[in-house]
Length: 192
Image (cartoon, rainbow, N blue to C red; front, top):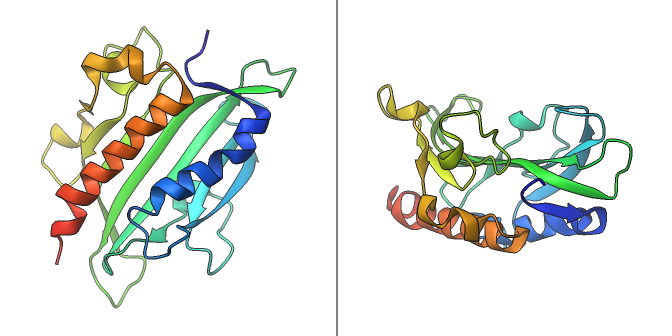
């Protein structure tokens, strides 16, 4: 059985849930805009919920969507990828991944000059065959602004509580909200 399974009805409300969580870092009271888009990755019938500024319709590649944070020079990216539990029915989905990235604008003259520096990932259904599965299934941080091997390390935020975190979508996203709060308090709030 997959971890973090929700009904298609709950999937419909998932964007709103994350929008509320992302208000922690957004300059907008309502948080960044979002859109749910179909994808065939990793399987037919999968759906992605991606977030963006809302000023203009984003391009087709959700991993390129960005939104402003409360810090002028800092941008973020967030998306979730949900996969049908049964590829012949679309009534329940499992969370394949939830990825949150923080970028710093390196040069104001070039609005696309964004450098990734910290990521919060969660891959709740990582295969048991992967040696780092225990770290990746729960929210974990990557420090991209560091020297190798640190950017590729999975710094787990709840390894001792994996079972409780992966118990339901509510417990997982509560943990994710705590991690975003940590990033906001310990990193973003300290950027001038």
